[in-house]
Image 1: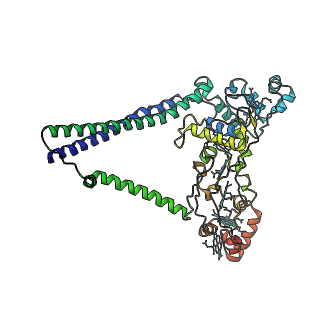
Image 2: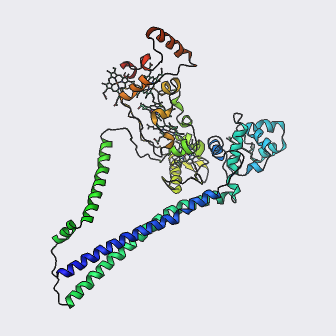
Image 3: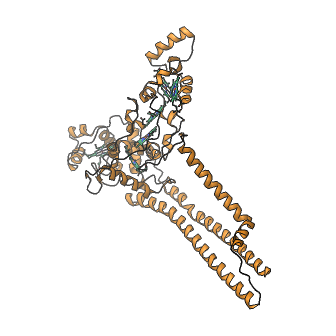
Length: 444
Ligand code: HEC
Ligand code: HEC
Ligand code: HEC
Ligand code: HEC
Ligand code: HEC
Ligand code: HEC
């Protein structure tokens, strides 16, 4: 009887090992299969000579996207390949001031104007010819690969879904393998019992406790359980600590997944485009959804960069979040008009000082010239906004002691600095020198 028992546990261990090695070979196979795809993609990327398409993309998204799409008509015509349509000097003149050209009677300009229902394009005199070259490099980009739309959208789409596909495949395969293993175990057990009974060996029904005994004896299972328990408890402990008011690193989930990485990072949109009041008022404020719609009337699908891989979320997810924005403002993307059904977005506040503290953005951003990133961290890399600094009193005061106020080019500070230098012999002017550590400055 003992022998039979040993056999079963031995075969179990054997099967366990088999399952493990199988699952490893499957995952490593999946990685091998996935690896060449991005490399091939990079190789196919066009090497365009004139202009920097990355810089062009930034400019395009901030200045032009309100009226132009790459592949479809919007307020203005589709711009993909427009560089080949006109000569470069004409394009410089057009972008810098199209109305002047129309007035001057340039035949191409006049015709274009008429074709587009006499819609006026904003003049961009601030754009240099290099800037425009960059934009043209961007609008010419995928045209070099294949017919525009198919190349950009489909190629990239296939890539993204390919990634999640292979993941699903591996998971599916694992489930199947486990299922087969369970069936095999049952079969093995049954045959063993049958063999033992035909051989006249009595198999005693094991009492329920023995499962636990067997478990306790199996060091591997115990180890796995301990690791799982440790992971789970540290997860919950972390959650508990966050809730208790250690605010640094606070990273709430927002009603619309809004990525600063994609907006301020990849697309280089200036912080102040959205947080426009940071310069002039006490608060920075969160942009109203109308600001979003300046761009998103036209950007209804997430395309992303075709050479960058979006590790955080899939393109489908990002596109779905733009749909959420449409739901919130009541924009019907197919009819291109507002339905009037609005659902205001309640952004969860990330930074929050107690009411008894006075903090003023314009004082720091405009007057002191402190960069947003000094206090808010590398926002342009944050997929989800989080609180970077502790926002404690010590943090404010330390900076007031350490940061030199930029005196050059500011007569007001220059005067204070000179006076203080005479009085106390200070060489540098810090916020603290000017009373930045007085209680009343920060506390009402
Ligand atoms: C306010 C809307 C608007 C903005 C912003 C805008 N455009 Fe235009 N653009 C138009 C319109 C409308 C036309 C069609 C001609 C017309 O009606 O004046 C046009 C035409 C053009 C053309 C000629 C297209 C063709 O098919 O020949 C080019 C090139 C162009 N725009 C480039 C740009 C660039 C580059 C930017 C960003 C720096 C930009 N536009 C920003 C509205 C705009
Ligand atoms: C396209 C618009 C846009 C741009 C550009 C942008 N932001 Fe934001 N920002 C938002 C929105 C919307 C929120 C609220 C949602 C969230 O917290 O993620 C926000 C939230 C924040 C918050 C947290 C506010 C709180 O609740 O405490 C900070 C800090 C911030 N932004 C800083 C920056 C900085 C710094 C930059 C430039 C590097 C920047 N933002 C660029 C739209 C923008
Ligand atoms: C000297 C540090 C400092 C700098 C520089 C700074 N912030 Fe802030 N920011 C804060 C603090 C502190 C809060 C919390 C304010 C509160 O709770 O009243 C905050 C809050 C915010 C908020 C939440 C909404 C609000 O106004 O309370 C946004 C958005 C924001 N900052 C964006 C910016 C942007 C954009 C810049 C750059 C233009 C910037 N900040 C520069 C310290 C700073
Ligand atoms: C200056 C133009 C501009 C403004 C303003 C803007 N966006 Fe975007 N947004 C973009 C661009 C460009 C992309 C990337 C599109 C792509 O790569 O295909 C994008 C992508 C997105 C996405 C998908 C990626 C992500 O972040 O989850 C969402 C959702 C989104 N925007 C929401 C918003 C919201 C909400 C606002 C207003 C607070 C806003 N956008 C304001 C230009 C803008
Ligand atoms: C990154 C450095 C930095 C941090 C962090 C910082 N400050 Fe300042 N702060 C300055 C500088 C520089 C000045 C001087 C600008 C000026 O004279 O207005 C200043 C000025 C001030 C002033 C005006 C002082 C005066 O003499 O009128 C107040 C009030 C203030 N800060 C409050 C705060 C509070 C509250 C915090 C924390 C939540 C904070 N600051 C965090 C750099 C900082
Ligand atoms: C540069 C700005 C600044 C100055 C100057 C300043 N405080 Fe504060 N104080 C803060 C901030 C910010 C907090 C909130 C800290 C937090 O929420 O953890 C705070 C919190 C406090 C608290 C509440 C206790 C706590 O830690 O939450 C007291 C009490 C306090 N300050 C007293 C003072 C006194 C007394 C002075 C003068 C010697 C002073 N503060 C000067 C910024 C300042």
